[in-house]
Image 1 (cartoon, rainbow, N blue to C red):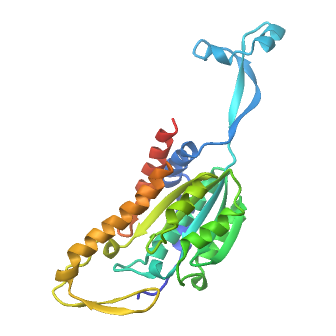
Image 2: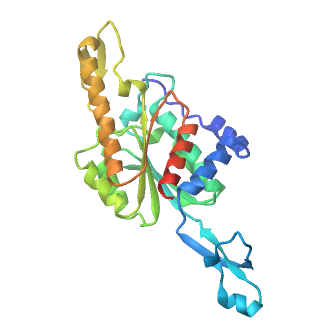
Image 3: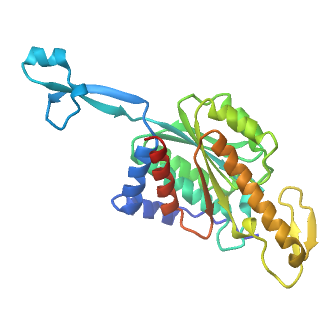
Length: 295
């Protein structure tokens, strides 16, 4: 097992520098339009111009002023986003130089930066088969560093996995207008997963981001036998790659499709990421696709 590093200081510095560059600018822009506000607020009037929609003319105000006036409406922007982060044992795996949980922590730190940069609120729940750490939704610089501090604490990582149990616990107290984003490898979800997801989908908007190691998706091609260990029970098994690879790869694809379909059934967003790729452009495309869906 690779050592759990979780040194996010270089990432924080990078995010601070990039706030005036592409990462923040493009990602913030796509996020802002992908996640809709709760409505429109009236803030005043301005003079009508020929390119305006005539339906926006306020005739009563126009008669009083002897000039054609249109209403100025702005989006009621403040959103509440809750990031649910799976920190169970399977997220501590890697066949490369970065654990899945390290990759996910960097992603969550970046998302938190973007969300807070727009003036929205963000919170974090780190979970395994229980809630390990919870930071209620808030906004401002202090909130960002509270999230970074939690993400950087190795004590919060590891343990068994029961996403259904934790989701039901969160569902009982989450507010209806909250945006939920689940970050997990979704390995080992229970049979009741889809029913629980439907309950969430009926109450608030929910999206899923799947983090996978290359070995999660395809069994390595080796000429020698490999020792496998269950991350939750520590049971071990010696296998021959030539014998198991075909079935393993098929089961992995079926597992991914199951999770993907469960989000599609409630018309929710889903993004699949592999730890060998940068998450920046996939996240931007994810926000862009979500924006197009709501047009």
